[in-house]
Every structure is written in structure tokens, then in C-alpha cells.
Length: 281
Length: 269
Image (tube, rainbow over all chains, first blue to last red; front, side):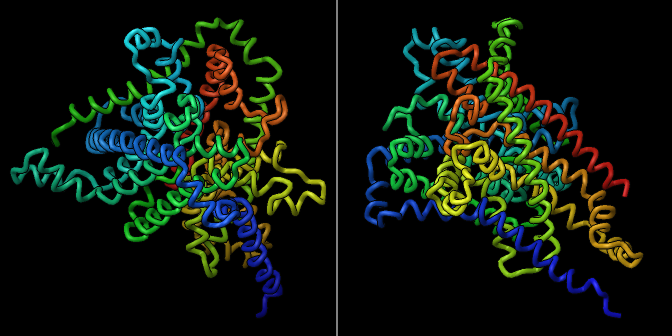
């Protein structure tokens, strides 16, 4: 029997695919293409020149420094949080998990503001800090603090479901065979979670290097001193230096692409990571 | 019993308290210094109110639009085989990975009257950049992955036999979609839209470039906080922040409830 609906069905399939692709290309793919098109709009010489600008280089260094502090802090925190939450039962566990997730629900601007309220000139610790000549807000420590807040859930979020699904059996066997707690962690747990850990660190790093709103509040925007790469992009853009802005943006876009590719490959080879996180940013 | 419980839990609680809990409570305590009357006065000035309305309104529109298109995209990815599917699937996560400032200037360049897409629409009198429509576009960009990634696994688990049975019984494709597919993916769709909405409400970086930031028209609430801070009006900035924090936390609890509901239904099936 030939179903009379067969032809419209084929058409329907194509219509769905075309609508999906047009929406994705216009909203997601083209912005990425535009970044590189604008960066190279005046040729490769102008592009390289923009990236060798001393302020651009200083911004890149500060961005690297920020990630180099924030990511390891959140890595250690993520492992500790996952160990306690995934391996043990205790009261208030759900509350603690919610608390760990909280920074994802907070607007980036507010993530910066809360540190201004504590360390700023009018903040709780402001007068004390001023007396001791310690600068946190409008200085590098504030940038690192705000970035650490924003990126704190990434590693924990990845590891908690992974370690919960793996259970405690292997660790308990190792202990019964005479391994110490640390040996058990280094030789049993760490090898089991290493790909999830890598995935979490990649996402944490991408966000740490790309954070804009939170850092913008605490930075003070001093060129060469407290400008991270995303803030440098904003300044160049407001000066109508589009090649410069998009050249710096292309560096961050490439970081995003490398992160995406690495994450996709990791999930292809280790499907158990897919269950981890995707519901955040 | 594994070792290290006291050490890791203690460290986790200390870290979360220092990095998250104490700073966040600072916002609530500092806004309390204002007193209820002044607090209300701050958040009900026309300019602040307009910015809150825009942040919540545009986020809702963007999340709902993504509810429709995210469903279509997830459907195409789960049910159809086409060349480049892996690439399309990977690019869904781009808004997660691309820094917001980069997305902001790129969307502005694309949708401004002399941009690739904005240039196509300008002759028709349709302006996107520097209008509220531009705000919606930027918020749709950041919230799209939430809808698609929440729907994909649920659509993948659907039993297609049920749909075929409905069609054998004479249901049209639309009837099958409306009465068979939608009821099973409804909780996931709602969760995805709520997650996208919650992300969009606080968004800053991708919006401020394309919005044009015209007072009372295209100023979002996070920008209002920024403006107050730049004018050293910390109490006012904090008051707006508290309104947004309360809304975000309520949303977060609502989404947790939605997810429990979705899981409960999955187990019941």
C-alpha cells in the first residue's frame, strides 16, 4: 500500500532540517565566522600588528595569570567536593550541592559587585585594606577572586556525577589490600576520573580566560595593568579599532574552538562523560 | 569506610563559605542598610524598572523562541541522518565556550545595518542592532544550548513504535506530534526553556554591545548595576542586584523542582 502522506513526509523532513540549519547558522555559526573575517579585514599584517601591540600582550599575560591561579584553586576544590559528596552520605548534602552550583545562577556583574562590597573602598574591609596599602579591587587580586567565584562549580560539577556512578568498590578493595588513603586516591580514584577531570578543567579554563562581566566590575580598566583580554576587546571596540578588537577576539575564539573540539573528542571516546554536565555555562 | 571525609568536607565547606557564601551574603546585608522604603524607591525608579522589565521580558521571549527552534534542532539531530551532523551537534555548545564579549562584538557586527545579516534586513526597514530585537538575539544566542542539550537525550529515548501506532490508528503527523510526542518531552522542554531563561536574565557581555544601551529602552538590568557602580552609588547597585539574586534563586529552585518532576515521570513510565 502506498501511503498518500509519503511525499509530504519527505518534504516535512527537509523543512525541519532547513529551519534547524538556518537558525543555527544565522545565530551561532556566522558570529564565529565574522570574528575571523573582521580580524583579517585589513590583511594579515594588520592582524599580526594588532596582536603585537604591547597592551594586547599585557592583556594576554594577565588573562593567562588569572587562569593559572583560578583553575588550580578550583581543581583542588572540585576534587575535594566530589570526594566528600560522591563517596559519603551525610545530612545537608543536597544543600551543599546547591551551594556549589550557586555561582552559575548569579549574573556576572553581581559576581563582581559582591567583592566590591567586601574589598572596595566603601566595603567591609576597605578601610583596613587602605591602612595597610593592600589593593584588591581595581587590581589583579580582585580580578582573580571574581574569576575564581565564577568558575568554581566547573570541576566539581563534572566530577560529582562521574564519581557517584563509579561507586566505592574499587577504593574499598584497595584499602582492604593495605593501601593507604593517599595511595588509594592516587592509584585508584585519580586514574578512574582523569578524563572527567580533564573535561572539567578545560571548561573551567575557557570560562576563566573569557570571563567579562565579573572582571569588568572589579578591574578598573587600567591599560597594561588590569585589563584582561576580554576587557581589552571592549576598549578597542569602543575606540572603533575593529581590527584590533576582532584580532584579540580571534584568540579567544580559537581557545573556544580548541575547548569544544577537545570536549567533543573526549565525549566520543568516553561516553560516560556525557552524563556529566551540559546544563550550565 | 573510606578515609578523608572530614578533610574534604571541611575544605569544601570552608572554600564555598569564603568564595561564595560570605560574598553573596554581603549583597543582602548591605542592601538591608537601605531600609525597606529606600530599597523600594531605588528599584521602582522608571529607569531601573524599565531595565528589569527588559532583562526579564527579553529573556522570556528569547527562551520561548528557543523552545520552538531548539525543539526543531534537537529533533533534526536525533531523528535525521544528514552529512555534517556531527559538526552541527558540536557547534550547539559554541555559546557555552565562546566568551561573551567575543559573542557580543560578533553579533553586533553581523546584525548592524551594514553587517552581513543586518544589511539584508535594513532595506525592509527591520533594525536589529541597537534595538530591543538585538537584545533578544543576543539572549537567544546564549540560551540556545540549554534547550537543545536538555531535549536531546529525552527525544532519543522516545519509543518510536508509539508514534507509528498512532499513525496506524489514523492520526496525522501533527496530531501525533501534539498528542504523542509533546506530552512525553514536555517536562524536558520546560526545563530547557527555564534553564535558558535563567541564564539569559543575568547575561551582560553579549548584550551590551548589540543593545546600544539607550536609557529606558535598551538598558538591561546588569548594565544598570554597572552604571550605578560607576557613579559610586553602591547601595542602589546592591538593591538592584538583590532583586535579581532573589529572582535567580527562585528560578534555580523552580528548575530543581522541574527536574525532579521530569525524573519522576521517567521512572513512572
